Length: 88
Image 1: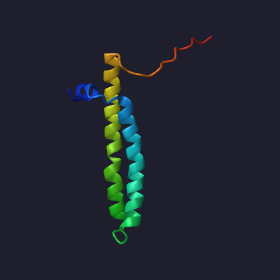
Image 2: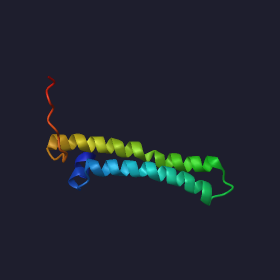
Image 3: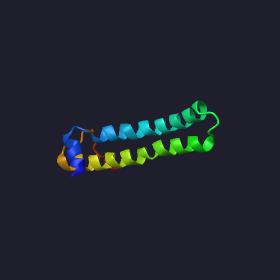
Image 4: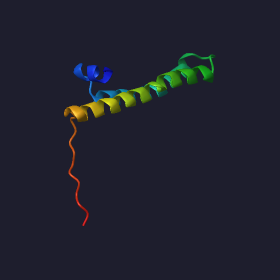
């Protein structure tokens, strides 16, 4: 299974989530960069660059969720869980 192999390689859900947020920033940067560094190519080209990089974020979020589920089953999820307080 791919998720298990990624986990065995040391890739954790936090890494995938960081990559997802970084790709959102990179998407905006590539859109702005295309507008400024490629004058005369138009807004459509900048939009294509932004969308191309922007499609990475959902993939990374999906990998993060899959890794998180695997870590929960494996017992290696590294988050602190606060106990629920009872209402009353």
